[in-house]
Length: 226
Image (cartoon, rainbow, N blue to C red; front, side, top):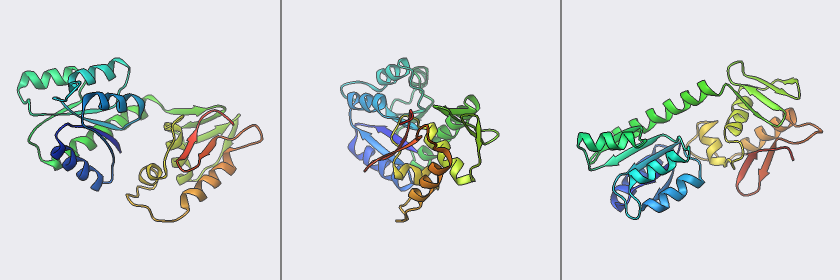
């Protein structure tokens, strides 16, 4: 998962970020509300872990702002405010779960994984087909079609294409691909990503245009034909 952690307590922030990274997740951090809002509205995350009491902009206001903008990222609220009314306020502001400080990291990690799993299941049930230009994949039948022509892909190739399409218009890094497509939480120091991208391109690209673009030094992106 790619996670945004917004927490003003440096000790808690370091502790949580380190634990999440050791569990194989990518973590961006913010120590204040305005910085957290900027990242939440300009980047794409699988999960937002949000402290209630933040400098500059409190967590509830931040949450209401991103929800008002249509951002549906799962949100786990962290707070020392553990009263029933405070928990209800946080959840009604758009939070998906609420964890009271102090907490055990193992519980935080379990709650984060549950939220991510629910989110992915919900997305899958709502979006059975994904497309870009004249290319479309059906997530149920695992059928890939471009310009009316069916394309046969191996399981790994389909998973790679599916992930790229789910992040259409966004730069997908090698680290993101290793974690999400190969389920590696380390860099194997091989060219397997390049090999699979090359094979996928040979199958889905044609004379009318290419689908996958390489962003040198950054990763890959699927968008309009080029």
